[in-house]
Length: 185
Image 1 (cartoon, helix red, strand yellow):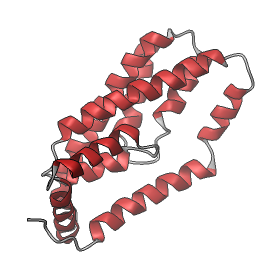
Image 2 (cartoon, rainbow, N blue to C red):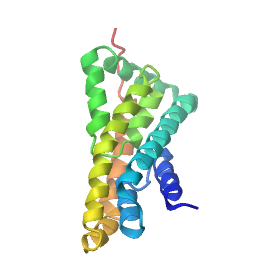
Image 3 (cartoon, rainbow, N blue to C red):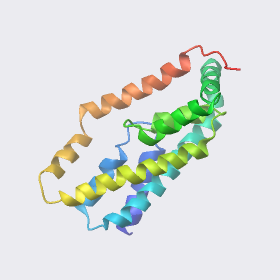
Image 4 (cartoon, rainbow, N blue to C red):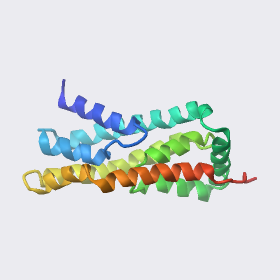
């Protein structure tokens, strides 16, 4: 199996998993540091895999939201009326998906539950944001391939802080759905 196909599958799986997957950038740095892989070829592969994974994650949450507590789903739907009420609010949401420094899994899960939110623009800006961030990480990893920085990055993937951030974003998603949002008219 080609290393590019393996990278695609690993990135896809990291982006379709709802929580506790390693950040995609760490996977890309790992592949760049440990395999003879062309950096410019890895970027479009990673973006495609990440977008496909997040799309399946969001649409799965949209489809299976019928199994979530009805009050929670209603609160999320009411929250979505605030986002879709104006272009300014929706542009703010797009900016969040473009620049969010935290894991986007919970953002896509929330957007999936909010059926009034069109997922296609979110996926497009997610891809654009990943074009820049993945390019930065992959070319940076290529530049430091022979240094001890590579070991430090791999060690960071297993850090307690990374796990705590995942837990906090999950709790944030739960909290968002438990706010008694009033629908915006």
